[in-house]
Image (cartoon, rainbow, N blue to C red; front, side):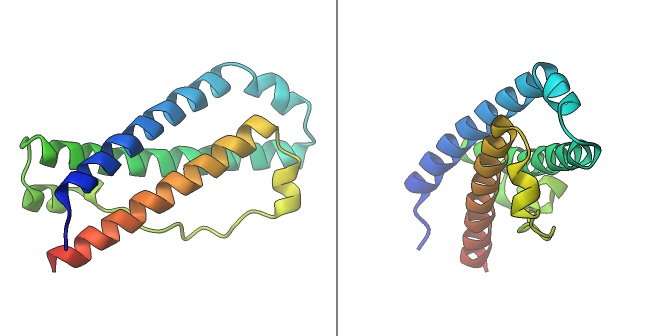
Length: 136
């Protein structure tokens, strides 16, 4: 059974986490990422760029889906209209996991952001699936 109160509470907490991650990612990219990147070997620099792109994609997908859910809760958009929107589509990561040894060579700040973003994306994806199943 769908519990609207817990859904709204989860969406609010997840949105706050996504917003915080977006700000932290922006601050990292605008600040220490350049110096930390220069200290890496070329292959690891490439890995850093790839992982930041993946992180950004996950955050963008999760944030867009969460914003739609907030719009539904506020009565700004119907669930049917939201379901038709491109932003309503969030899928589990289909990208292969990076080699743990390669990730371990990346700066700790990036590894923490990657981990938090993966968890958030996974939770949002699971909620999306449960809501999609409840709507069927």
